[in-house]
Image (cartoon, rainbow, N blue to C red):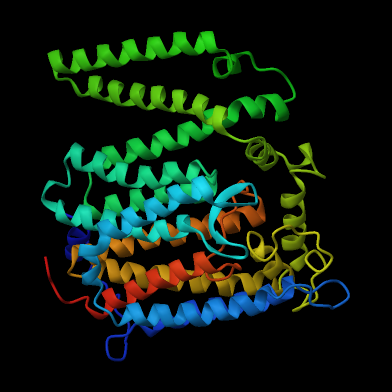
Length: 452
């Protein structure tokens, strides 16, 4: 049984807020308010120290916000259930576009992620986030009676692995990572087995840790750590993999013969370790030099303060200098003297922090909290599993962007090129997210209709 139906029985709190004609004005105005704030600070990012506007990004953003709002409203009043039959074709279409992007796309900021002519183009990887959510939700809805099956879990995981793998080929590590929280949250709401979900979560965490440790020992630690040789010596790697494989086989045999739970725990733990260990070697082989440096300067920006560490240092300076109430709109120095890189996209939060301070940041965080609250309301109140799962996937996508981007700005997350949704400059990402919000509004409007 999907988790959402269990929650309906357990939660007695009233999450539904008043609305007119079944339209969720709360999430609508929260999104619109965030986009207006974004336009103001994209404008600010384009003003230099002499007060001269050097880019027209804010004009483009106004156009994207206006057209995106129309797209959102169009899908809000359309019956989202029509998308169930289109989920697979849309998913396959975006996969095709992503393959074409890898082969013929434009290279921007080190990633071949744009498909188009000249300055006109789209990012299929952004669109794939939404089409993957739709297809994953459709698949899990169709198999909700077998949701605890390992086969269903693995098939669902493959659904997100395909676009994730193509995005990694561009390479765009940040966008590829978005698919993981989308999968985990959607699978949890669908009622997938906790041990399968935790297996993916722990494997991912250990892979990241094992990938980072050799660089930490090489660039950060003051002394050589002998144990780190297991992550760099190929001969020791083969020995350790062989030992781990033997332990896994012995654990399986022990469980089959004795049926003791500790043998299953051993199998579970050794498998997570073995996969994470192998994946960490693969990750270090495919990571580009600039991606490696992002990991290193995340651990210590002072390793390369005028190179790879410059972004984090300048962002922290901007955030810290804002204080409680900020320096005032258009009064920031880090952005107007062009110290902040990608200041209208990746580091838009740094400009906001410098000019309107901690209090202004609280307003933005509260607006995102409202969006998450309304999404939770949709997940719980919708009687359509397909609708609940779409809302869960959207929560995963928006929350990941929110946490990673703000984490980048304040130095607690590595730089991955993830924009702050609704605020950062960009058309493909904004339109995709607004289309998703429109679908959420449609789900809310039809939340009491059971079609399963």
